[in-house]
Length: 128
Image 1 (cartoon, rainbow, N blue to C red):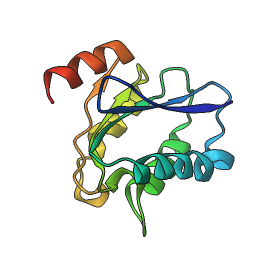
Image 2: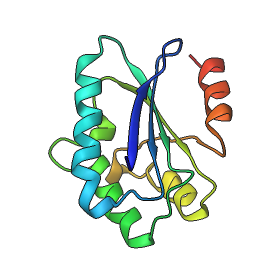
Image 3: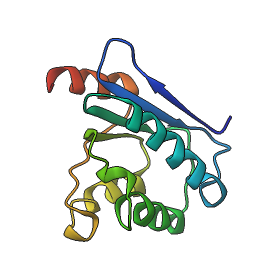
Image 4: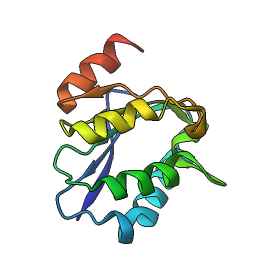
């Protein structure tokens, strides 16, 4: 599968991993629907760890994806059960995009970025 969603058993974290074969244009509705389903079913706020380490994305898709997840009628990244969003990537364009999400256009999202899932989990555990 091109993406996975996993609720961690010992942490208030949901990890969504996007693999090399993820096709944003054709799969973002499906991946967002899976996250909405997961978030709608939980009773407490969760940290959303977005692992795009393996995912190669174009600048055009970054813009499209940011608009879909952070703006519009029901933006995933503003779901009421989201405590925080964390990005895992080494891609410089995605790191800049995470900084850009702080703009009021995207709702002022502060998104820490880490190079590995392990680093992101250390941060999450240190900042409950």
